[in-house]
View (cartoon, rainbow, N blue to C red):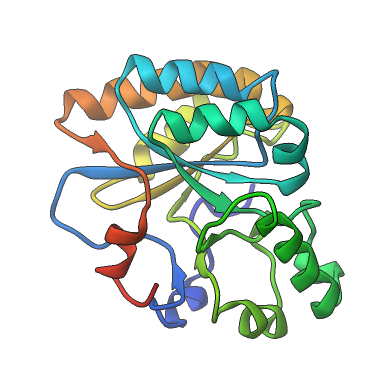
Length: 214
């Protein structure tokens, strides 16, 4: 299995434009969810977050927002953050820069945000330079691999718990392929860190502007 953390060289890029974590002394974690919203998973995730009074950030595929605007409305109403995840969940390594830019902007037609996470964490230098004026790239410090068919629910939880700490940006997925792992790991992850005195915040302009350009 690939590394839970992103490649180290990405951290050399300016934190004003590309974010992997929020360096801090506070006991705070930043949960993020990719690829939704979808009716089979996202409402259940929202129910779990509400039970534990946790806020998160949802990096959403524009076409899913188009199809399920009521779920998007609920995400916003319940105080969660939102991020752009392209309109068609494009792999940047396999997409020409101009087409990639247009797809990101198509997602923006459905909701405004300065936060952008490239699907699969894959993007090219050209795509980065085309988008960085308008978006803050948000990667992660912990990838749970909840989506991977070789990841068991227990391993998913271990990936999340063992690698998270102050200021970590943690990735789960509100998608069907992650559902079994998510149902097991997410509540236990929240319980574990709440007992240790952590809180769960959404990424927003106030937080990001204090850690570089926004």
